[in-house]
Length: 314
Image 1: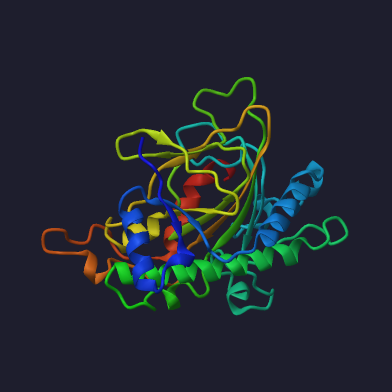
Image 2: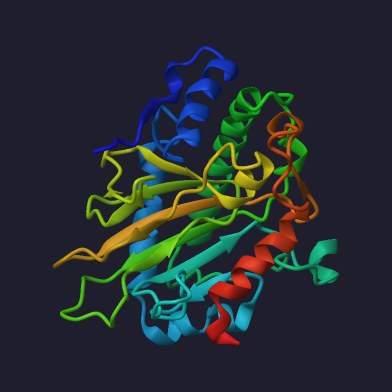
């Protein structure tokens, strides 16, 4: 059975050598597991503890933060409200989305630019330290994502800093996820998270030990990434696949609710800046393999994907 590669990124002397290892995985499975990433276990543990406290709050508290009220892809998503596979019933999970933290007087917020709203937060008395914990982890994941992109730029034949000004104010989302135990009976085709590919450039996923994530290989097998304490499961998203003209692959995956226990995970989705132009990198097109996608922007592409995911809320 094919394996998803494990890469200790602390063991590479420079971005170029790291890029070769990441690029090989990006071309093959589109998934890889990294260790040596520098995010302290205590920080990750604090995020999971806060996430568990949030999802244990009463339904009215969570509903007050609903994404249906707040917009801009921020806030609480209830069980069944999201449908990652549009052909199947709603996903059996709940989530809480945190975006790039902007003040209410930021020009993009005032101008009502798509996905440029303010974050919403549970009350300080109810969940003390929640906001500070999440923003610290968001920043740590963003720094790590930028580092990985500098390595990938080498592999793609671009300047090391090619992605710097395209990801420095990103449409990134830190997403807390809770999957309840598998019910006695699903609706036909229903699961925790339906089969899908991620929308942005790169996903950094921290999980507990409950399992449930499954990745579809090129020959149609479903395999599970290795479960390693402190490691992050990473995968290529559709925007980066577009930038590379399908040199890198965005791989379908799903989550199956575990039997007899809850599952918690924390995903950081690194999407481009809203105005970043996503178009074929020069080194990824040839006369025999011309550009396959029209240029788009980070905001336009994200909107097209989220509109489909949340169509049932409209």
